[in-house]
Image 1: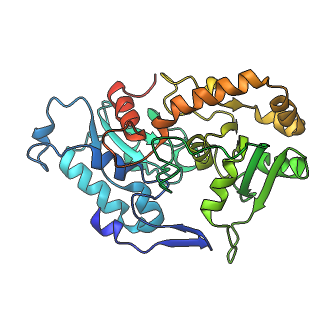
Image 2 (image 1 turned 30 degrees about the horizontal axis):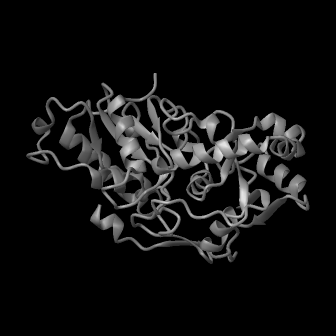
Image 3 (image 1 turned 90 degrees about the horizontal axis):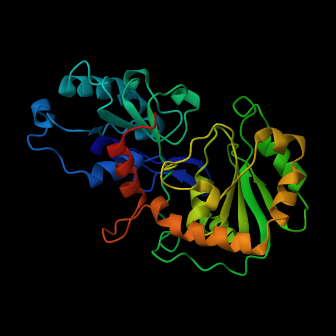
Length: 323
């Protein structure tokens, strides 16, 4: 872990940099690893006898972006420590917080995933987890940031994914149709080399001005913006068929989010706006209240006195993956 965390940051564009630290958006394992004490006699598999679940802190998500050459050695180390059958039986849990970070050597173990797309496609069993949203401090504070006269009905800003990956064109269709609508703020960004993003804090503050935040599928079905919008008190509008959302067994997502079928959005993208406009004010207020109740389960912070996303993930790990 220490070697990986000392890797150089990856700059994708101006104001769009991934660094190998606790704020890495795919870095679920850093947080879960920190929350769990090492077993007595660490390094000795016999110390794990009787454990209901064992978290294998391999840092594959970090390797995928910062040190891919370390994957074979990591797999060898896991097998040496836990035995050749470590992937069987549903006891051992490994995190792949990036959709591209899954490796064949962990198939059969319980995976923590943001979605089961890309290299993680076909993962069974798995537990859905949120992206890491751990900053700025005001976004993950105990009290939700105040909405600044949420005068925008629907907000979205994001890059257009590569056509070779996002063949369904959901995001492109929505951006084109919603541009210029009076109660929508829709901004396209680009991920091309040499591109420049607006400062992330400015983007988040626009969420504070919106009632709903659009979260369409992009490169894969999941999106960090879903969880940023929850932290900002903006009701997420999710367009991603087949996406398993975190904590669905005990959180009612229908109470604080809107889901739209991809086919509906592609056939009539403006129907999304019409649906949102037709929601009664009382229902919107109820959804905002439910969002405030759910919000602590999606925040990543170091305050042990507050509930967090890590607490929710540990609960899911103890319960085991959904059948």
